[in-house]
Image (cartoon, rainbow, N blue to C red; front, top):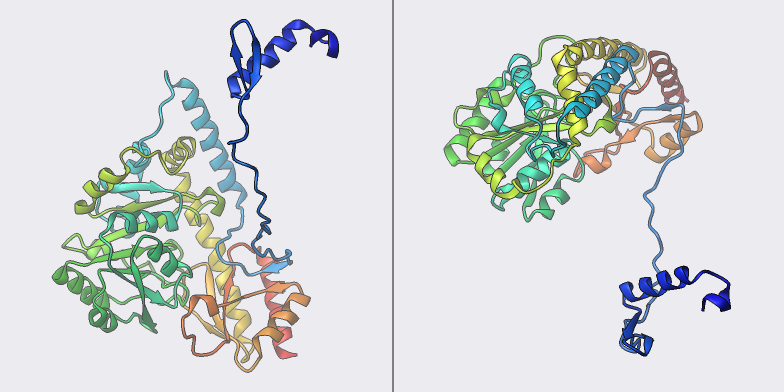
Length: 415
């Protein structure tokens, strides 16, 4: 073979050894190499599958997309320093170890005083699990809870019903009123679990008042139910301090609390946390003790460093001031027209608006032609009363772009 193909004998021997190792041939002493019987090998069957790609919209200059944030240079520089320090710390470790599946202890310890001072949440590091975002936190909770009925807000985050169903739960919508979740509907349905966003309801933005919070907590304590509190953007209130978290009022460990860092630094960071009630900590360890961490250890260490020197607190203050200006600009611009009705809540990084008397498809097409994109709430609202509610996310736009985008929105509505 070496002579026939003009290569060295060593090359041929290595080729035969590789065929032998992969099982294509077998060797018989004194006779040589033979092909394996291929008659019974599975025949390759090509099934034509048309690749399905999620629909991606072309970029537009004024995209009022929710969930993105503007990159603030001072905050980003501080984050880069925290990452560089984490890299040096990794080099200095005598041996590389995988972080605990529950999350880096230093980060969990940093979260305890942060949650206590900013949201009134009372917890220990052992109750905290670091996750790769809010949906991952909800998935974790649904996976360790007994299967049952989950009450979800309507309108609310899309996809929560499917997520609950994937873990064997049954999702039931609970209406949201102009003062938050309909607690009377909760007590009537009596679900095993209630998912709610009481600090700033998504998407309408209303706040669940203290009286209704206490009724909800009493119902959960009396009937041994669990409340899942998603505190997704409590940092952004512009007229007053936010109400304390629902968890801070719970006296019977009936609230699981979770939040995210994604709106604090960068959505692509994909890092959040869950505060488990004490009675669920053992359930968590039983199912997750042998799993790897949800977030890379290097990123967790960087976040712990970001907390340690106060950079995260300074970033929140800086980001809150920037988004307050944007929120005030939206309110000011929309006051000049009667064609757009805002649901103004003095909080958050998005606003829901109603644009009546204009057909939805026509409006969206005209806006796209002007480089403006807003988002209908059809998929967030089961049985939406009218098809004229839209979501404006404003945190990702600069103040100048926000002003231009709003001018175009108003002009299109007027025309």
